[in-house]
Image 1: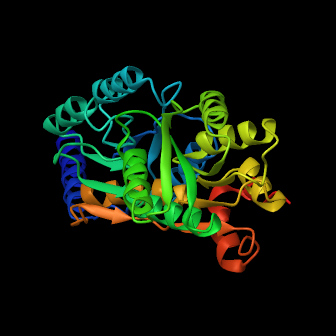
Image 2: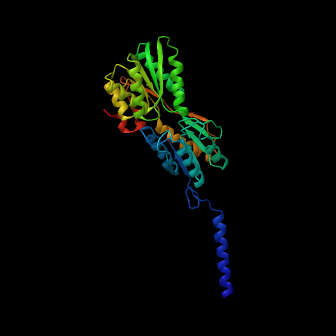
Image 3: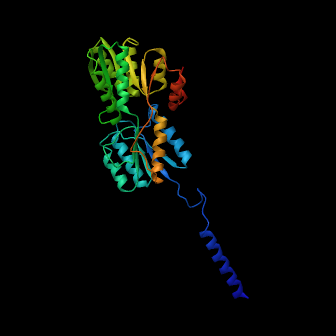
Length: 329
């Protein structure tokens, strides 16, 4: 009797195993590993990077990915950014979305990650390497061209202008600066009298623009390569009592810059789409891990925002990427 019962149990167990092997698990069933991505901005400051985060979070939620968001304390501390990448590699994340502070300083850690089987998608600013999966970014050179053309137009294609740069080694802003410089040189009656680094802060931008205004009291216009540069330039021009007289064309959007356009103290700003950048960075990395072929370069959208077009549906839709605060009246 005991032997017969044991035989029945064994048969039942074998049948259960056979049925289990032939049954496909539904997506998301127990046993399927959830991917973890590290998304590393240049820094978690200003309006730009928190908006990149919103786009990355949206993609992660949509695709069922766990996201670790970690940025350096500011955009000039590339040693901190290197340590963050190394930490994520040691942690064994499944992939990294990185906005490198330096086109050269971050090369080794990215190539080390790739060598260990951790794919990296670069966003926003380029890297001097071919080991990344893809590069998702604005056409920054084109953005600089747009800024130069706008500034030339509003100063009557003549006069002295200044360029407020970001930091040495930042590929994205260096491309904007080159686009501006190359284009403004095509206007024979415009003289580029000053180029100064603002080192990624409004305070430093304020200082350098104040110095330029003291040296060139007949300055006609300023182009800034990023958001903190534009904020600092605005403050310096206001403090000098030249708001609206010295024309400023900025880059990126924030409540302060949108308010400046409405008031007429900032003529215009060239606006990227950071939400789209964060979203596509994550999605492109996920597609690669899933075995899909992805483009080596993906360009995100770019617009020139002026007082005349600020309230058009197209521009308002674009500004939504920066959140509702960017629509400050």
